[in-house]
Image (tube, rainbow, N blue to C red; front, side):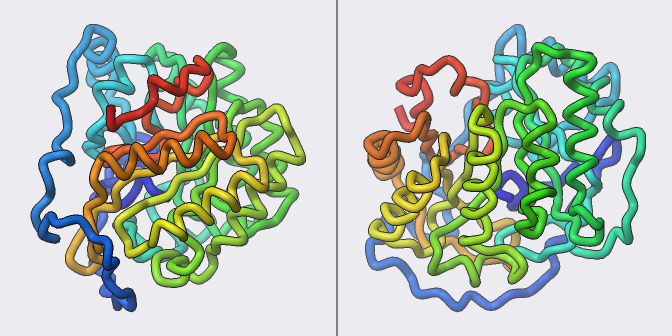
Length: 331
């Protein structure tokens, strides 16, 4: 999941720093169209703006006073100021240990052996209410150790939030639940507004970038099923760029997503968490991100959010404003 690459992660009120010690092999060729920025030195366009604003300060104050934990803060997300200023935040559920080992992600890999915090749904509802949010993104590690991949726990968290703050819109940036339709249904039917599952990269690079238990087609099948099962729920996915993909492959990915009715797509720059993770093949210039956004809009997506600092949850709330001109981070 894109929000986790190269970041410390948080679960409940406990923060764990990923060790990122798994060594991997690259197995990819450099993109011949790579930008002229030397790999290893980040270009100027990857500099984040300082967070400001009264609403941001109010959310930050509540987080501090009540010792709440958000992915936004613990991951040092570059967009925290903009999102918090508009009442949007991301919370990670189901622990801090992933049962998969994707090669772009710094989250710890292991076997949680079925552990779940039974109080987490109410804790999530507490956090959303205290922070005064308008939009909450629930994200998580993969939990292949659980019979349903954690689908019921996800649904319980959404139900608890909706029971306490029914006007808050909820997005689930969910695992693929091993592609089992009835597990996907549990989350899609929980009362949320947006169901997201990240395809992460183009099809050719999937076996290099993602854990073998994940897959390009599996993610497409999950998103397609979610949309058919509940057409009222928006479906969303995210793609990292800079891993060696070609423009033809980016266009094909957009075609594949449009064909299954995905509503929202985000593009962001892949950044290497540690030297033991996949290297950056190129830093994608802002002009290219703007171009790929236009490609997506031309294919009929409700929204395409595209920019170097875009992450899966970037200003997720604004899709409901139906103002896609305001979501170009490259502008």
